[in-house]
Image (cartoon, rainbow, N blue to C red):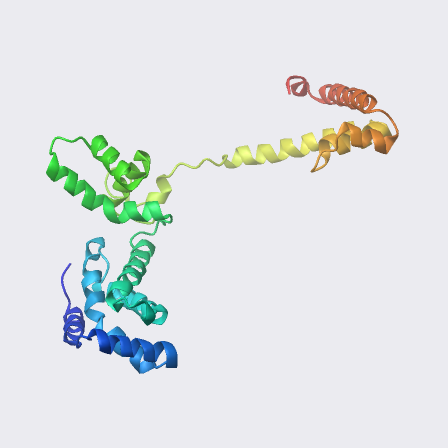
Length: 286
């Protein structure tokens, strides 16, 4: 990726920012922490812009603009400045490094691909380390197969070999829009989406299913109408309710034993089957 004029100006500005000595950095951090001195915070952030640019440059291989990477890193830098505890006697650059890297990594994960991935810490580690580990393994043993490399990386990062294989495939190819036109053969400039097979029923199958479904519902309503009141209560509570009642619960409600409830339920189901089969033989095999 080429460096634009704007990128060069940004880098020049970052590199020209004065360094802060430990005592001066400590004094500025205390001024910000204790007195909410915005100027002190800004001086700390400006002095560490070279750190942001340096870390942003490590992520340029993902094809995102350097200016955007630096901007995201600067957000992480400001977050570090807001959270920094000067009493811990740690240099700000040591503390800020984690926040800058985390902010840039989140930006890369959000924008590298339209397909969201790498949401867990293990997946993030795989995303950002797979290429480096694969290159190191290839240098160490040029005879390793792809499967062996995947196993080594999986063991190193604590993920499954399938995850490594999937991430490797994603990093090896770019996103392709389904609205992108195809060329050659019988494509005739049609979008890719036009050639995706659909699992949905065909229109005539949908119409047939709707008609048959309504017919079966009518048959079932008619059959249910032939049950007596007690049979209907039991079938509704046991078979048609969202939460099925137990035999014991129905026995208490109807004042009979749960075994008697079971007998009435079986008799009602057999009656429904006979009535439905009389309408259509297909129910005999359901």
